Image 1 (cartoon, rainbow, N blue to C red):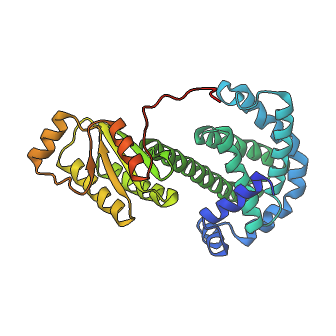
Image 2 (image 1 turned 45 degrees about the vertical axis):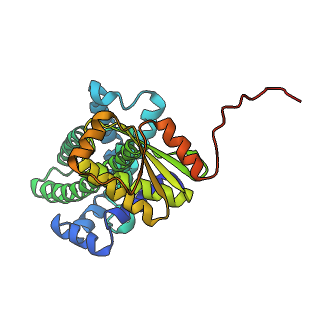
Image 3 (image 1 turned 30 degrees about the vertical axis):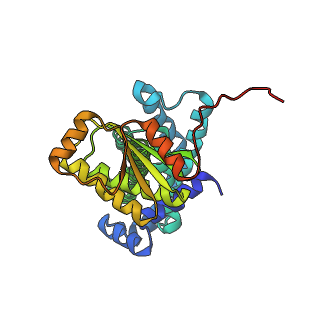
Length: 316
């Protein structure tokens, strides 16, 4: 299955587009069976004017410097024109079922992927409707017939626009979620120092939200690595106050429940003095001033020793 098809199915699920939602949307847009029947009857009109409408539509897009950037070569222009003709004729299929909805989701997903912002998308659709209205007057001539036809076209076009915008928003929220997850991972970089020995270097301020992320990341990595101990280095934390100390103690308690130990490193003289003044009980964790000492202590816990004995390269 193509990635585009998977996008459609995914957004169908995210937007909860089932039969009940379809009925609700159609009712809100007053897109009735009568409208669908009228649109189907206008199919000959659509087939007659589709080339002219699409050409005029892309003349607008290619004539504006901001939207022209989305069509860098002639091959792409020819391809999107073919796609647009299919879309235009689809408006006059006389159906609005879940298959139709899934096909329309492709439009929003495609626009989000190429970076077309909603302002250009909505502006283009306004022009699209104007082009259709002009052709209706040329072909149908009678005011009543034009108004009835254009009313049905407006309803299904705005139905489509809502789907595309919903898809656009969902795709952006999904991308934002991925970015936030990446940022969280970068803000709590748990490093494997040795087998069953982990290191978490903390840099920057620690608020309640980040403290929760730290604990979650630490516990997950300890379980995954079956770690014996984790070194938490706070040399990069600018302020260690009661709140930060409390977060460290809670993390240590959770680590102990998993059968691992915590080694706190990066403790400066000022931090040590502050923690004593605050009455912070650090007896539940091992504390050393330097990271190197913490690594040596951690390796000792897993039965390894750092030796100062020189290694002779190439010795027999």
